[in-house]
Image 1 (cartoon, rainbow, N blue to C red):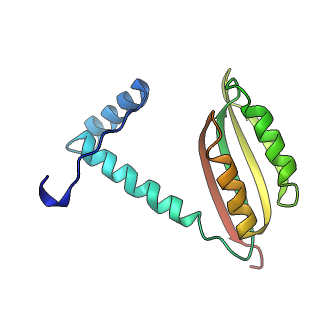
Image 2 (image 1 turned 45 degrees about the vertical axis):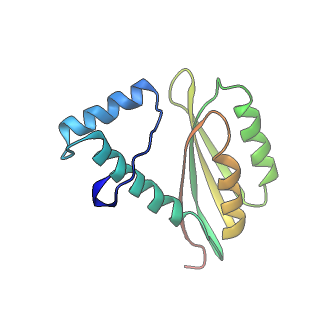
Image 3 (image 1 turned 180 degrees about the vertical axis):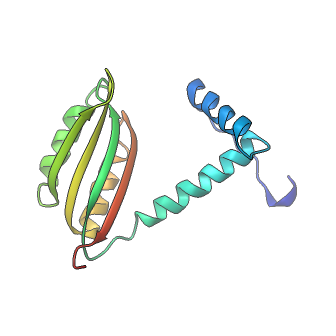
Length: 138
């Protein structure tokens, strides 16, 4: 391909494809590829911000998940127990019949918070994990 671009294939659910098409139609994107490149850059930037954490940190981990997915609710509870030294509070909200949002307040060493994120992200049924942290020492 020209301009140093490489072709790749991505399989997504039809509703996500439709949403992407809406973004392309209403935004400043010439194509799905352009919008996807922009989204991937944002994802990689955010992912890199959430790795290599160190020092005393406080923050919130927001997790969106499908509680109807087999085992995800139990796995979330198990992780809360496994990370009891880091998790200081959990707020659970039912967004729909099957989607839940958990806001997990965390405090502790950045490496331990990163380990929590690394445990949450691969769970089947988890759609999104987002971290916001601040230096706990001001």
